[in-house]
Amino acid sequence: MEIKAATPRNSIMQMARGAFEERVDYEMDKVIQNILDPNTKPTAKRKITLTIELTPDDERKQIAVSVTAKSTLATTNPVGTSLYVTGDEHGELVVAEMVPQIPGQIFLDGSQQESPKILKLISQG
Image 1 (cartoon, helix red, strand yellow):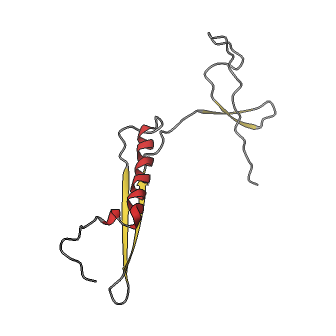
Image 2 (cartoon, helix red, strand yellow):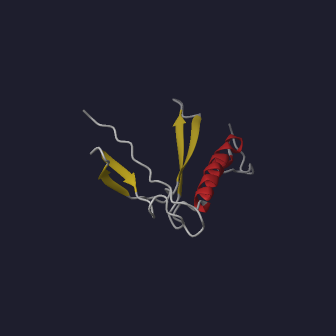
């Protein structure tokens, strides 16, 4: 196959009917959505990695090309709580999530403090 000098040249990203470029755009959308997510650190670095694999045949005439795009996103911000270790009236171990007020106490807005969540423990033995 002879190629004339006047033949326009294209980027590898424009080949495969634009599918290579589409993969990069797909990952870019994921990165932008991650940047806009208020649950992530705004200044965290995000990354798009493009892997282009080229596999020639035995005669070095045909080359199979595979493009993979992968994004590395910022993790979500950590969410925390506090646990309180105590015992119940039967001497059984109880681990409860701390709540800001005494359960049943009324807040200024009229709502009531809910009871704390109790952690489910599974004994090994």
